[in-house]
Amino acid sequence: MCTKTDDEGRLKNTFKMTNQEVELFRQTGGGNGKIVFQASVRNKNLKGTGEIFLCDDHGVTFISDIDDTIKITEVTSSTQTLINTFSGDFKAVEGMSEIYCHWQQEYNATFAYLTASSDQLYPFLREFFDREGFPTGSAHMRHFTWLDSNYITFFMSSSYMKKKTETLEMFLQNTRDRTFVLLGDVFQKDPDIYASVYAQYPDRIAKIFIRKYDNDVVGQERLETVFKDIPRHKWATFEKGSDLSRNVF
Image (cartoon, rainbow, N blue to C red; front, side):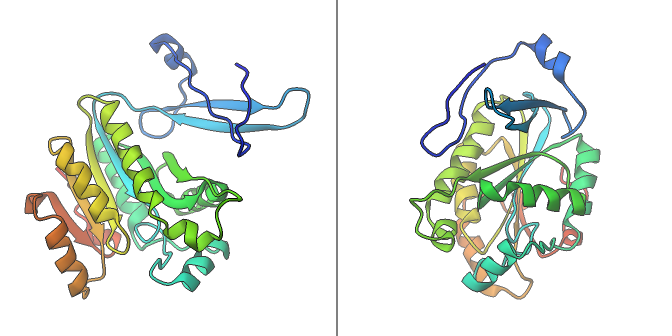
């Protein structure tokens, strides 16, 4: 298959595979398996490898934010956001990889990760996932371009709400009976995004977990307001992985 890069130098294409072809190329990884592919430049020694994580109509998918949900970013501080994004010393939220791995094994679940970060940072995030032992899964990110004035403006811009919402709707619209669990944090707009999507798919979203500090009274009040139309048993808060129930259902 041949294609051209867009104005930002990225490859975008859509292709279909039969069930027989999927089974032929399926490899282990990501819960339901994955397909590994390569993209290369004709007549040049340039190529990259990508992964397609498979997800059928049934089962459970955990969709998780990254920054301040599983990785310490401190998004409320521009300085700390830059340090924790570009220092290369990514720190995990305590206990999150352990509970994610437990859920993956307990429910044969797939995982997908959402972030406001740029896709240019994916290699560093992938190294973080592998080092900390998080379940492998698809990463859904935005692209930083020369039109963006600076990284903080890009990171904090409202466009990430649109991107996250579109990604969540993509999962829900392309699976008929799959159950989803959403994880995010109170420090940005995850509660608002999740509440909006829940309103459209209340039967498909089994649980929402939001990270906040135990003593964050304002954050708790905000959640009570944003989630006022969501049954109380369907959402909960946590600060570290051990606060999360090992039995979601």
